[in-house]
Length: 182
Ligand SMILES: Cc1cc2nc3c(=O)[nH]c(=O)nc-3n(C[C@H](O)[C@H](O)[C@H](O)COP(=O)(O)O)c2cc1C
Image 1 (tube, rainbow, N blue to C red):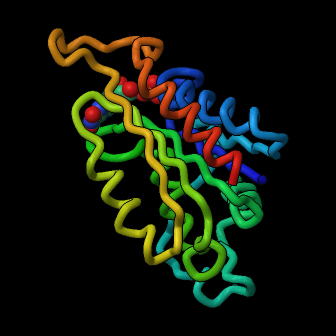
Image 2 (image 1 turned 45 degrees about the vertical axis):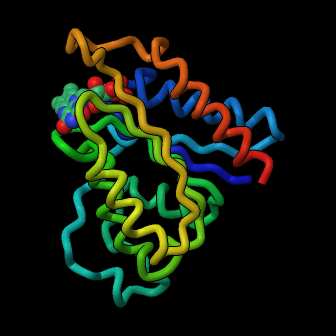
């Protein structure tokens, strides 16, 4: 299986990345997979310009030549896309949202028929982002799976280390195992 992991957090190796790691561990236990990581915070990706150049360009390619072109290529070939992001002010991070907006080019051709594993870490709410994926999944024939993890102790209001989220780490791992068997 070809897997693309889109890392939305600027905090490399922290909460959402750790859950993604567990998912990948479950996956790789089921066999060898080709995994490509994109740390969106480290990439030069311009926001979508709304030019709709992708509507008419050959192959519906985006006309903006930047590092998003790497993601287009990998996405088109991938079976599974892992979206790993914290919630920032009610949505996925700006880094990942920029990538999502640029996927307008794929919406013409190539976006559909994938499996998505959406991993979200949050303190208060995640519904807006999960709701978006649930809304688009039937239209694009996406097989959607989600792992949602609250990283705040509700009693004290303090952040928890991700290692305290035992159930969600296990859930991510088990989802990886399940997807790896498909
Ligand atoms: C700038 C900023 C904005 C945030 N906004 C939200 C939010 O709107 N809703 C929420 O539930 N958590 C919010 N959080 C909390 C993070 O989503 C949470 O701490 C998450 O576990 C961080 O994941 P990471 O370690 O992968 O970056 C915010 C954190 C930061 C730094």
